[in-house]
Length: 269
Image (cartoon, rainbow, N blue to C red; front, side, top):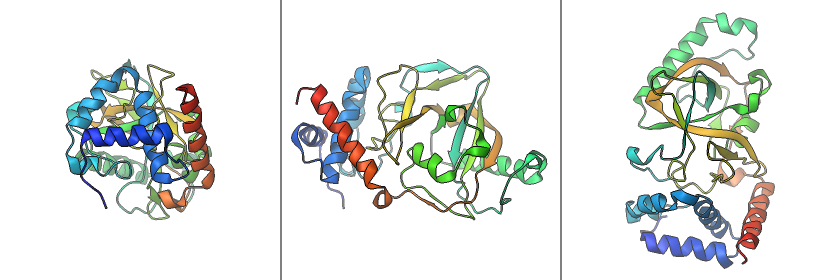
């Protein structure tokens, strides 16, 4: 159940949680992470405050347990980087069922199913309301070595579900000529998610928050979906994946508490 609140009430609540809240309580811990992300957003804090002030009281009342939808114009406000011909990766569970080979080998690139998967994903992406895609370089990992559960957990994909009929697919993405920029994500791009991580250590990219142990694992960027094309697709091995909040390991929450304690110390609290 959500409760309508004002921007001032939200700001006061997350500040109070960060400053002296009981972070053994998950709701206060999540509020603390929201405030820590806001503090780590540096020069974007005024912009983020403006975005929050433009949200409805009902939308604000959903935080931190539900992501809020923001205006398209408020996406891609982080620092931009020229992308040249670089290939980045978008990991997703397509929202349709498709029978795919149990295992992939060298023959996959000659399989007609590969071209069909790329074409269908391209068409479905155009239809979606989403304005942006989250891309990663996957730390130069070999796609054939990736496991669905660990990858999606390390990308911070809370709530994701996958199965035999709905596989995790890693799409290779190229930023199209003429629009060759990628952006460091801001808190607004994340929908003000507590499980997103602000990353003040770089101007050019963000870092994911692993849902396994809270580590910063992969570099990440956002890009308007209209500016990229899918050039390849690699279905990951069959796996039952469930990353609902109730199924996260205690080690994740404990590492988040340690992070908040460290940040409190940094601020002299």
